[in-house]
Image 1 (cartoon, rainbow, N blue to C red):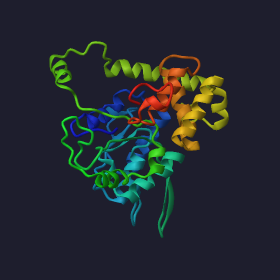
Image 2: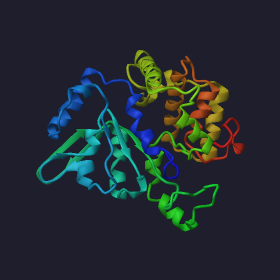
Image 3: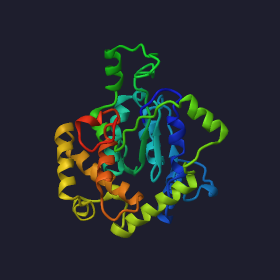
Image 4: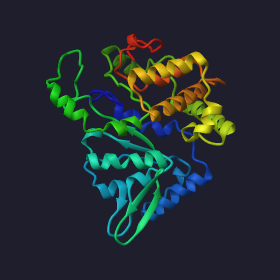
Length: 300
């Protein structure tokens, strides 16, 4: 999530677990076992509730990854089967951020020390938030940003391309207008869903994925994707066009297909439609103008 201070990025991230389906028994047991290894208290009321970990950007590498002279479980592992939230993403050490690349691909973190070697589970959903520039107001309509182009480039370059390539959804979060604030204060939120309603849709979509392939879409193999993520010939051509125009990686190609399949599941659709594919592509480019690529919504 990219947006100015106070736009609600942290609040949105902290609500993610309220819309996730509950863990199954094996997942809940794994989370409880990891908390036991880390000497963390177990609370029965949180049984089957996905964990939410939000380490501060000043946390040490050992605190995040794990390790030490005697093995300590890091935040990455404590987020297993849940959410790992990085607020102020560019403020984290680049070395720590690059460590995320392994677990995001494999679901494990390998730690090698002189006295031991261990591989810990770390299959989490990464959610990150950052300001668009050091002051946070780049693109503000009131012209509050005073950052130079070079400062903005250096700030955004702290997050590497390979890591961003592993993040499926890049979302702009804008500040609330005076009208929106007034509606919130008055409780006038017509056509909005609460967490219970959203969780029901997410749970239903997840159940559909397990019934179809025995796993969530995120874990589909390439062979399974050929079976379950089929596109029409015209939509396949559109995806190839996007790949060429935006110079997307092969990883992005497969992740866009999985995202489109998930959007279709949330829409209760049997097949991936044009709108599902276009939305999945648009999530890769929150600040791209859609005028240059047919089919993308305006401003995406």
